[in-house]
Image (tube, rainbow, N blue to C red; front, side, top):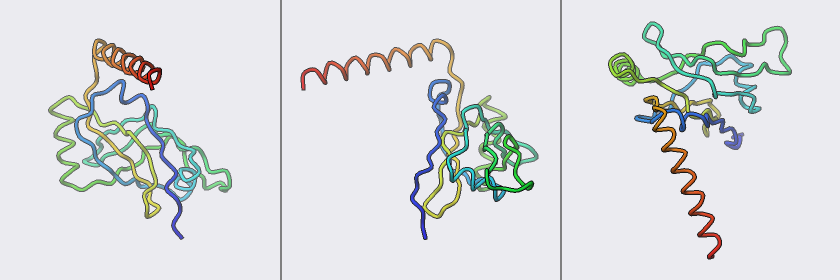
Length: 153
């Protein structure tokens, strides 16, 4: 029995605050109650980031609410969760983060067609204030253009 892929939790602030360079899809090592809470859509990656610890990549600050039907064996909502990537990808990412001054940000948390939780992560560079202003200006101009097009259609 395959369930519909309806879970798609996004990090909406990331596009505004960072410039994306490379994107990867990683698996997550989860406890039983964590995956059940994610399948209910009770997770947030808004304030999260990724960090290397002993050659392994972990997502920090990802909030997964406690599962409502669990007993005293429930999980910690803010615990660090290990990301599962190939060694070659991990080495490349670690090198970029150490040498390039870049960061790794989770963009989206989703359930794939096999029912596994996955995180789309990106290698990102922080935007400066003037870049953020440019993003706002572009977004406003696009909105105005769409309004004008809508009037004439």
